[in-house]
Length: 451
Image (cartoon, rainbow, N blue to C red):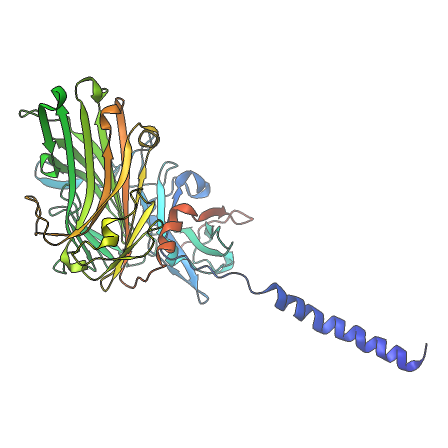
């Protein structure tokens, strides 16, 4: 082999060593960026073993942003051994008081839940950067693209540093939920919805409507019930920086002054999401005493949404909500869609309806109800007319068996919404974030003064 050929081989080798790794790295691409911002993250206390029995006031949640670990908002909600929420505030007569079932010093227990938001997660931080030497790492993975983000739950000898941010506020006297995103009011059913914390903002809702009809004696006797026949009372609540949990009791006026038993319902509201649970208790098969029964549950929006568009998966083209039933609106698909989105100058709202197996397997027919008619009149409307009124109509309820039937309507929303953004909200349940807990390789002890 000549000297020239040896030199050529040397330079070829040098090129392979220096250039190919960079080329391969470029082909591999950068790791995916974690971009989930709308998800709440809920972790059971039993997964946080090293910190169990720590006083909650001594725990803080931190995230690394631009190389700095800072406190981020979180809350820990108490649950009893049966998995039921033990809420912070209960009613005694006409006054609210701290729940007497709660000890004066709360500790993290295995049934509890720690809750925070995906938008507050940060980068991975090594234990030597933690402001306390006892704690754990929470690694959150987006199953859609395998991107990751992190938070750190740490324990201190003194009250832990806390973020001052409070995403949601609850006013029990008026049943008013206030946040920078969605604000609402639920005295019995959802009748108030605005974006932002100002309760004087234009209300996007007129009212929730519940219409139940039954007939007896081969149609000779008919009974109609509406949302006006329901009563509610608030029993307890927890108002945290991430979510508000309430327990209400509901009952209905039946016939001839007879009222149903009080039924307890738990509701959880986040700044960008309102869970609206509905339970129907049927003591026996209705068909034994009635010939026919039907129900229609709808949300009737106010004229403040006029000019917005409505769309959902089976709809051929978006509908314009303007108080006038167009030919397209008169012929909307009858199948109830898995979700609907309403987008306009006010922002955007995404609604979903979930129901349990009892409802799914029941011998009933579920169809989509829609009305956009400013001239429609209903004696119970807060304001005349229906704008984008939508919901579910159920027929054949006389075929139901005795039992409990649960529905769950969920509202998501934000101001800076555009069509397509519904994917961000829908993936909260379709592709939930996955949380994994990591502990330091060696157990660490708290050093006084580190906080």
